[in-house]
Length: 543
Image 1 (tube, rainbow, N blue to C red):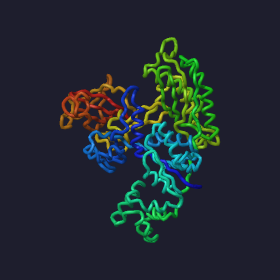
Image 2 (image 1 turned 90 degrees about the vertical axis):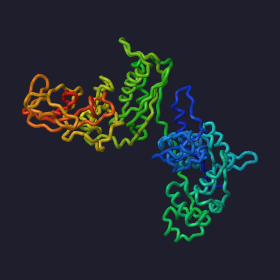
Image 3 (image 1 turned 30 degrees about the horizontal axis):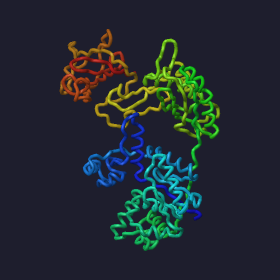
Image 4 (image 1 turned 180 degrees about the vertical axis):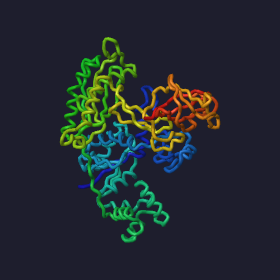
């Protein structure tokens, strides 16, 4: 029994993880989706994983969304998310590690451990079967009801055995019988290896090879020439000539730090003062492992709720940065959730804080963020200076402009709090039809300025429904003073929001609009917007 491997397989794990996440996101008292209900995971509108209930209704991998719904109208549609699958598989790894150290995660839903031998042996049962029963019992407590086990001399055979095993049972392949077991399997089992395996299985089936035993009868040279590297690997495994070694994972170190308050604190200042030591301990724990945190999740537990937020840093977090983030989170986050009341006499939290926890979200090697030989230079001084200003005036009070996609000048800029990485921005590389040509304006007005444009006869200039000007722009008035125009370009009609005239963007009737670029004789250039029925405004200025 020495050197044997046991594999744990959780069928349809992507569906299971998606349903677990959906149930976890529901508010208390809401009814979760039945785990036994038909469900599929979709990627690019195609089914990539389906559970047993969906397969019973005729749904298969590769079906399009509409085909799956036609076969099973009540099927639950879930989006593919590899990160979610790995995140929800972590408790399974921890549950197995608590019983049998040396876990080797293969992919979400599949792991391997060295076969336990006789350590878990029970009366009337073989050691591997008893070990599988113990592991299955622990997994049920963790919320995983469908787990299957396989044990064999090598990893590949153990995985195939696990896929053939009944629920919560172990299929043990006798020592030295791996090749015989594999040869009795149909070639269609290769589809479980992914697209490459599915392609090889389809090719073997079209060549008339039904079982892996038929594939094993081919010569090594024929297999290498016709089926490539993957085919040669499968052929060697079927011959019993390849043994895969396990690379067990090392459990990640516990980097999180927390502090509890007894009695709970109802003052934001008291909380931020009390977490200083915990923040220093958190940063010191990272430094001991030559790590720094660029993203930290801060959780604050209240007597009446929980506040959790992930904070980002342009370089890396220090203890003072963490204390500032706790203060800002208590200031802003709780005000929006109704747990906090800002009074004129101070910052009193109506629901007292019972615990604050720091969890590293993204850690990087400390050497990647080390100062230069002669210090950090001007950039580091700017970062520290802005951080001090932000600590005095508040998190949201210091913002930096970020370029994003859009048609108008105001649409192309987004203000992001300093220290946060911009997320959810419109992509810049899209065509954006109707976008004004370059160069981009140097100043965009938060509130457009009122303006007036007339032709040579002092008649107000307008734009017809066909996008033509009623007269050549001759003079412009911004504020009190008129200025003759040296040149102008446009109009560029706005076609946005044509379905709703109330938006004031594009379309016909009251929604018509157009943009102009004009240059005055004084050298100043402006980006103008005309809106029906005849109003002008200045959106931006050029330097």
